[in-house]
Image 1 (cartoon, rainbow, N blue to C red):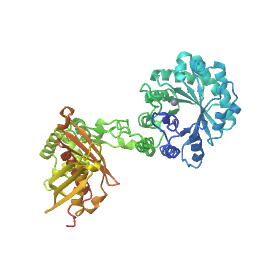
Image 2: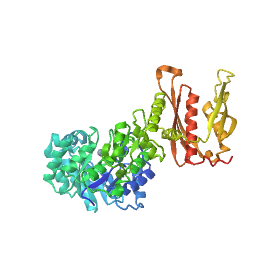
Image 3: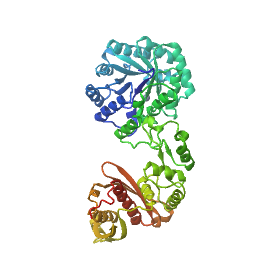
Image 4: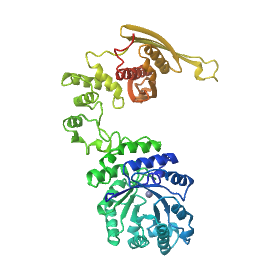
Length: 534
Ligand SMILES: [Zn+2]
């Protein structure tokens, strides 16, 4: 074990985030993932507080963790009670784990105002509870709740709590910024004071209410804390906990603390996404280190820079944390974005001079008409292909006609069956012109059906392609129903997803452009072009 211990509380404190609820299966899966990235301690939950956590600890017995130790969480005995008969402490002792963490108050005001007991009784509660758990042969960590607030109002008492816990046999004293209001230099001063008092390892448990969860954690490590508590993606109550996805790479790559291996660090992005998936939250693209935009480049000058020197506009090599650089194509793009992008796509374009400029002009023109390629890379890739003089599209549109008929027999019947959409379409594949018609539950659906009907006879594998998302955005709201609209389509073949874009003042036309791009892109990917059977 390195000198730093990583302590994850995603499953307990992280689950306090609004809207997050992990099932027992989620918790077991997340535990395995945390073990894979080299977390030393995984706090699984509070067995004394709910049946789901009891079930988790039961099922976790059969997990084989290669690295991490499971931790059960609870609180000190009740005021005026006995540790031996305290249900919560018993649940901890019976959770089937070797390590437990208990939370105890270390702020005088919290003791008198909230716990409504005496300062002395609080010290006894901490000492008795630790003594009880130590007698059961457990490793015991204390979470000193509100330590930094307590250190401001009554430093002697806050430090006395640590002393009492150390004497009772605690194995680590984790100092908590429970309300997340401390500043890094306050953390430093308080940790240094605690270090003078005891040789028991200190830990830090920071919340992010001031946006300083990570900064406070790193300040604590610099001041001598060795246990770092946090959550994946910074999930937690209110503004969250200190984010391990930022802390782990900072420790390893910037502070030279070898807390995980290179291979473990390279799984960080994957684990971040895995946990957001389990939490049913979309991954935050703007997360430091692990977000999809963390290493994306939009400005042309920046792209010119990274084309010459990869590190010119990035603070680390993204692959170290399992992320990757991404170049966005947009109005701001320089010629080099286009060159970089075409290289990335493996498209052999003679883009050294005029071609790249021409393509860039075209992108700018199309963007001024409402197309946007930042999130429609498949459409952009098609632009690159179309810039090649010998490009043969797998199909081209001759024309289409849309009929939308609304039949309202009575004002009370407005069901969709009463509205008919029909499309007739002519497309050209090679030298052949195919004429088909289809109905649908709306004009876009009918268009999709008719196009597929025409193309399936040439490209049967197209049957795998599904439309998974269809978004329409109005570009100038003031234009009302006459506005320019942008349609974004996401498609999937069950292996890969891709996004295409279309824009027009006509919603059907915009949909057609995005739809046709989607199928054309997939056909190119399958190299079906030229191998059509007819
Ligand atoms: Zn907390």
